[in-house]
Image (tube, rainbow, N blue to C red; front, side, top):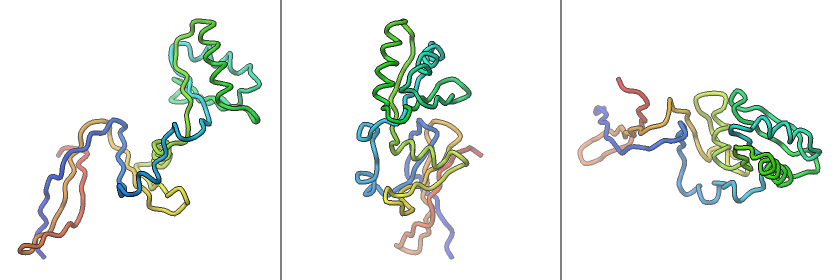
Length: 173
């Protein structure tokens, strides 16, 4: 068996500390954009987030409020029979009335969130197709943002070159 040769394919820029691998032919039919689906919650963050959350908790339209990232920001869900649009409208009204500084961002289950959910409990995970079958995408949590080298490990026999593996280098040494 001939030895493997490693070839640098290129570098991948990562800004979410997450890398995904998929067939590009699956992206258009499977990749969900937040703008294409109804928001299910509201993210509240910024200097006056706690004051805003206190005001929103008094609304009938506000359901569960979940502190995120150790309480640095909050995810606000509407109560049954209400919509995120109602909670968002009141949040903006409260911000304007009190000159509160912060962001209120409607969130939807988009593909990026599906990726984050898949890796939530570990190093990586698999994202299923929307119809439930496995194999749409694999995701891996990286040590951080940056550029990662991607290599092909190939076996050469005469004029034939056979791809044996793909390697993403996440640490030096």
